[in-house]
Amino acid sequence: MQQTKLPVKLTGKNICSQIIDKCCIKLKKLIDGDLNMKRILLATLLALPFAISSLPSQASAAEIIVRPNVHRAAFVRRPVVVRYQRKLIPAHWETVRRGNRWVKVRVPARYVNVRV
Image 1: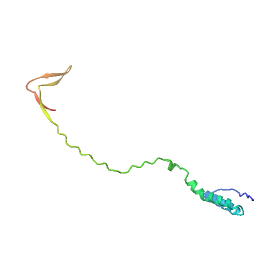
Image 2: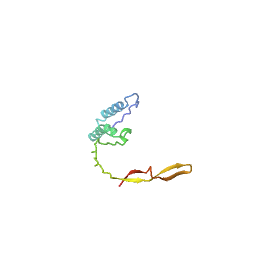
Image 3: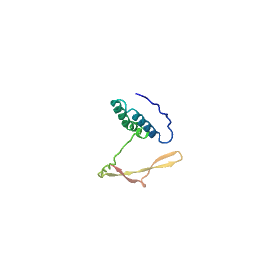
Image 4: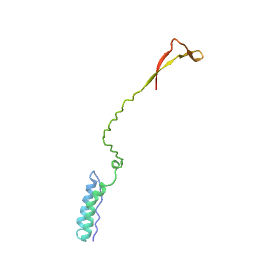
C-alpha cells in the first residue's frame, strides 16, 4: 500500500469541511486496499460527527432544574371561637421621675377583656 502525504494547510472558516475533504481524498486513494479496511475507515468517518457532537460543552454541563407549575390547594382554616372574660383592673402604671409606679385608684378602674 502506498501512502501519500498531502500538504496540510488549514485556513479560513471551514476547517471542518477541509478536514473532511482531505479524508475523502485519502479514502479514494485507499480504494485499492483491503475491503475490511474500507469498512473500518467508512465507519470511522460516519461516526466522527456523532462522536464530536456528543462531547460535553459548557451549555450542557449546567445543571437543569425543572419545576412543574403545580398549583397547591389552599387550606381553608376554620374560624376559631375566642372566648373573652371581663376583668376589673383597679390600678394603672404612671410614669414618674424615678421610673414607673403602680397606682391603685378606685374611680378610673376599668374592665379589660382577657382571653380565657
